Image 1 (cartoon, rainbow, N blue to C red):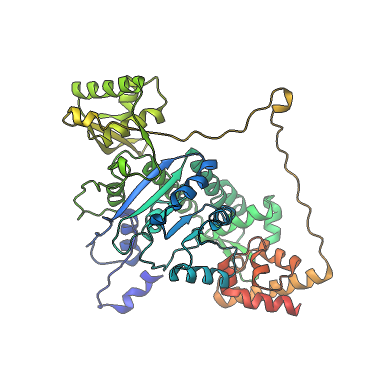
Image 2 (spheres, helix red, strand yellow):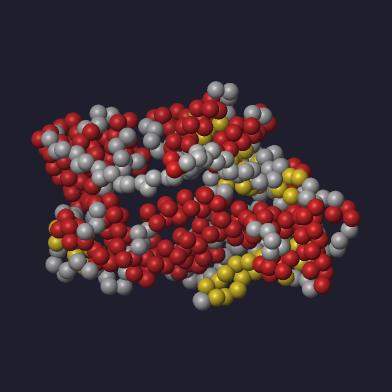
Length: 513
């Protein structure tokens, strides 16, 4: 929309400014705004006082690690990002027993969130345990630590969050705790947020040029209400359906699928970039600088992160390699001496096939930290896709470098003890059908009043009704009849954005029905 309106401002010069745009997003900004030139000035991504530490650790051990990390006053004030409201509240409660700490998440009232934020900025709270709802616009200069309890979904979001540490220029640290299970969690949320193209097509195939009631279309698709609403919103965003304020649906653009598929691929690529960062062998800061296309940066190692300065790590522990590991390390060095600049995959097949790939890459990281090899990112094309990988180049070998060979200790995953006998077999989970809430005359009256208000608001803003409030949230409000903001926030499907925009009016409708 900005691009459509910029011509009216010509010949005034136009500059587009952003904090964390990758080269892909930079090109998109230029195209969407219709900028006349492709002049880009990308710089300043390096944080010379921020030490990044990435630790692979099982989920059950993470809260304990954070408690030990923040027990030292030198690591506070701190922000801890948790993957869920439940985790944020649990860790804040544990920390609060020994230091000033508080949770911050979307399930709290605006007044409570504002109070926590104010107390943190004043120094009355040492630690905030937050979901991603916290941080935008926060300018507290003396944050010493930013920790993540799980793998973020995007590298852009991660960079913004760790950027809240050390704004006073003093030494600060970013600690990321992760494991493979985080990738599976992110995949779950991706599948939930981006339904398959087939589900969108089920709706599109039932649409006609003439408007149809939304409920009638849903019944013909045989999708449950939540799945239907999710797919309908995506179809609307990509132009496949036109939604009138009264929630009648009409067929939209036939060419909606390619743009939706492109969006899915983009989101998957973002998740993969975050996972590659966690597993990277080289300097963490250089990895970030290159990700954002900062061509002005010299690309020199930061000397602070876990891959540059393992001795300074505060969470990750290291040990000397075992005899078996030393043999594999020597085999890698010998192979590179015979033919330099080989891929990690080739070296694994030829020199370390007895090891799991993850364990082999742990040894590769040790070689990189010791300065015995240089790791270089590369890509190859396969089936039209760019596949990233790493190459190893041998450097000058000396005995001093060999003494620095340390292998990262991986914290074992805690497993519940298995019971013997037939009872140890897990019983397959069965889905229980949720009982539909019984509509009372009062809830039916309120449901109608809320729908009437939502329809008027949608018409005024020229958007579909589900962009004002989903059916799930509306039904929950009609059933529970919340009396205040806290009760409204407790309704499934209601978040702080809805409460901030329409909370006062919704509560008025509830009281009047």
